[in-house]
Length: 211
Ligand code: GAR
Image 1 (cartoon, protein in one colour):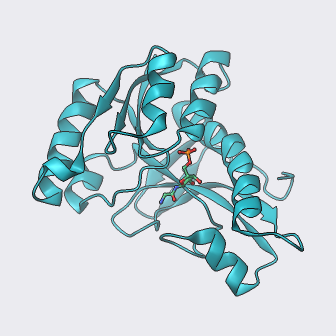
Image 2 (cartoon, rainbow, N blue to C red):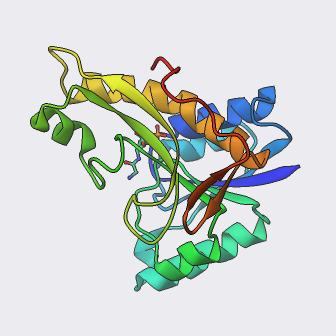
């Protein structure tokens, strides 16, 4: 059985989608070994506890330097013997040393069609830019901010009358479909990380997915 450690900062709706996909076997032979939040008040922690998953708070404010926090985080993750580290609404940048330690074993979901709109406030920026298509991306984490090789994307049409809230909600629903799919491919070895980019045993057809 493969073990995931899921890092969160907020609501934990992606965590919930991943947990459900582990339970049903959509992500085969995999369980969530622990959930770690850098924010003590993150609702995601309560979701983990309800599901019987160890929930750990690691407050970044208790660490003077970013590298100290990342070292404490690494200790916790390795304590649970994670095969893969899953960033699910985790709102902290990670140091290069941390990212390199988990190279190929750490994923993130980002609420835009990368490489468009890395960073924060993606929905507001997409609306301000007037894009017709927005969405979400699951990618391997590398040193560059939201810059690692992409595994899956969901495209979401921007509709007349959309505001930040309505657009965010549609993107989030798409996230809940693509994150479990990416993890299923990862744990089964269908996709893996190389420094040159994602390497596929059998690359899925794109442009067949409604979202
Ligand atoms: C999601 O939209 C995720 O893509 C985004 O935060 C939200 C978390 O929701 N992540 C980032 O912006 C990462 N920089 P959740 O806590 O309900 O899964």
